[in-house]
Image (cartoon, rainbow, N blue to C red; front, side, top):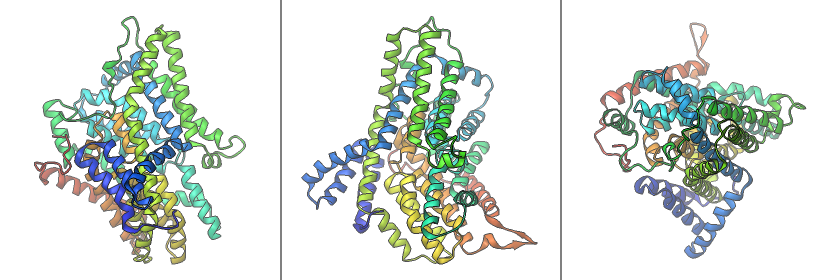
Length: 530
């Protein structure tokens, strides 16, 4: 965490970029403007020097090891999609699935369940689920905005609480580091497990997905998008600019290719298997236990190995089995690269503005404000909201966790607050802000693999995220005031009982908003959902 802060000014670059993005729909220009404002502040309010420093900051962001590997992962994902489109495997598999899916509701449920089942890694889950289900949800006139929401809200929330994932090692490592510095003699992994019932936002976000899908409810901008899709057959708004520029129709499968469903399934299985093995191997397995290996795993390396293996297998299938000429394969790979050029640019600038916000001390500022009002009773709620604000501002849940843990865990320990609740508040608050932020990498990737307009995805998802976040805040307040420790007829209330109350509140609120809220008011930020 930065040693000093520029105070409330530290919020300016990210907020300016976010508001300008939503208002103008010019994502790249808005993000770079925010970077330039932050860089200008950092160089002593010299706008010319700020412009030069902005370029250096972008270079620093894209050459950072993890980020550069994620960019390469994104490019290889594009190449993989290009070859999959060329093989016709996705269409073959989609036809098999469509034969079993008869309704819009089944298509939406299938998307949600698949997003949850691939819980090893949020990036891989978003890519696979979006690629598989996009042609299916298109067939049943489900808006791309809804698909992006389903991806965003059933991948990261599930992966963040899964005991075998790319997240668990990072989260357990943060807990262990603080326990070591504070001399706490507890198992970091056990406390991680104990924190799961306190991940109120993460669990409520998933619950809301199934409430909305099963009951066929929507509200706010999403309701308009879904009405457009159902009544007009338009999965995209008239002014939408999908984050993936190239569509499957732009890559034609040769007539002589007898497309098989396993042309798609085999590389996906390879991706998941190699990623899982890579996580364990890079963490020291078999020399270390799986849990210990996951803690030390090189996440970026593992997903990179996974997608490269999938690409290699696809190349072998196309050339060796489908007998496709190398020139056609090369053209498809190039088209795949074109698909991801815009997302790569957005990711690069989003990372940069996040680093600018961190350099300005946004984390230190938010924490200092929060510390001034914290009492043991309200600590979980304050920690949750502080993590959300930081994550929204810097666009990364992992970065927010790194900022919050050295402050919130010692504070909770000194105040005598239960550590699982405080740790759960950090981890789920980081995800809440990440879900609302248009500069978040997971938000960008959800737009990308859903083929949705990024601004439309943000506009339609924010009301849902805010609903879950508001209920989660109430649950953290109730927990802080001891509700979870009460007993009723001899039975303890506990966080799971609070969570049950939260789900009930979500259900009632979603019903009211879907049935009675006015959806005729234009979107505040000019979404193309109408």
